Amino acid sequence: MAHTAHDPSFRALIDEHAPVRQLGSGFTFTEGPIWHPEGYLLFSDMPADVRRRWDGAGVREVLHGTNKGNGMTYDERLNLIVCEHATSSLVRLSPDGRREVLASHYEGRELNSPNDTIVARDGAIWFSDPWYGRMPVFGVERPRELGFQGVYRVAPGANGPTLMVDRYLFTMPNGLCFSPDETLLYVNDTEQANIRVFQVGANGALTNGRVFASGIKDTLQPGVPDGMKCDQYGNVWVTAPGGLWVYAPDGRHIGRVAIPELAANLHWGGKDWRTLFVCASTSLYAVDVKVGPRNEPFMRAGAGAGSRTAAPAGEAPRASAPAAPPAAAAETPGDGLRLDPARCALIIQDMQNDVVMEGGAFADSGSPVHCREQNAIPNAARLAERCRALGIPVIHVWFVVPPGAKGLTLNAPLFEGVADGNAMVRGTWGVAPVAGLEPHAGDHVVEKMRMSAWEGTSLETILKAEGRDTIIECGAWTNMSIEHTARTGADKGYVMVIPEDACSTMNADWHNASINYALQNVSAVTTTDEVLAALR
Image (cartoon, rainbow, N blue to C red; front, side, top):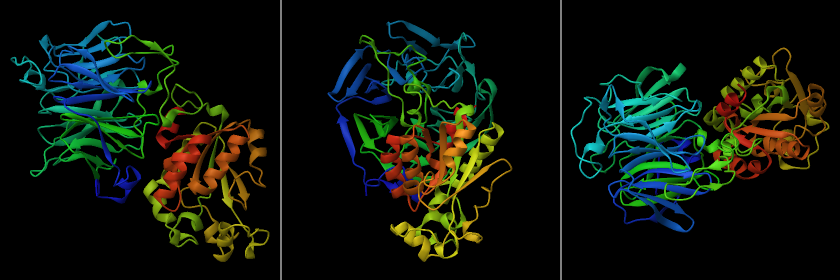
């Protein structure tokens, strides 16, 4: 088995037997991978002082003489942000070749050596500052001017960095990443072998810091906490002994991805943002995964940047409209998910006791278990609460049959199962909505006896009366009612938005098959957090 699942939820993120492909080798020490929406990966060969590019044609050198660049990212205008070890600087490289120093000193003293960097939605640039770049090989050996290793923020338009953490909290701060909604910042410490998490407030203020994960070490395998990224669901992926360790948002260590060499950093990319690129010692690797990245500002670049994309240093810039990541690839191509509350409606479909609860008619199908794994009921409740606050219609769609299933045609196994199981019968516990998703005053209720919410119902009458053409759809089952409703909605001209973590079905395989294929073609597949952010 190539990879190890410590918890069943890990299997929804990556196939345990997914092959790890070597894309290139023979390098000195690879770091800082970053995917450009035009379809290529840049990465650092730090000790060799080289920046390299990988695309379908293979690996080639794009710049020799990078000031021993390490971590890299893009800002929302696709300028390249680079941590330079040799100059102790964080710099921005624009498409026209200009080099701007964003940070080099703190309190009049040189920074140690910026190492990893991320960009927030407000345009602020964060970076960690251990002293690796003042060591032989990894940088230029020289004395340190600061007596601590910090984490900094450079606000838009600011003249220099602001220290955001207690100066003696970290020994060797390294990888950084935000949660999908940017309410949390994760920082790992290579020497302490742990990850800390902070709540992010106004102007980036960090509070309530705590240890999120500890003991990220193994005496039998090489590897340390170094690069770190958050996926679209809030799981944290960090380099560690044997490859990558994955932690659920609640801190549980749910699995390990095996990499052949000591892993240093990682980043999502590829045509559908479902390829994980890993820089590991002398090589660059790739592995296909089932989950996408946190939606970073550069992934939405295009409209706000005049559709001009930054070329890697040493290459001429080219004009194009970069593709958006899957989580934002819907109504506004090339930009982030944007939802006008005045045009939206929320459908909560088939979230009934017989469908998703233990003791229900379909409990043996595995549906209750998958519903819990997806956290679908709480996520749907969050959506409903926010929609009601914004005046967005909430429409409950229920499968309801009369006693004896009179009027239900038995032309498909699903409908036969409803009749045979005496399920979804009006007036019974099984037909009632699950606890937490009961209709509120002002909500609509639509009844059906088919998979699609459109078939033989008042749904479209309600939508037209409310003047709504964008539908946020959640509930059960992903590969049946959710998919059928999304397909028909798309055919009718509605924009369909699917927060997939507010949907569930019988098991993760069926769910992912629908999410990754059919629904990608008829809807914007996203997450609850992304929808909530888009409705602000």
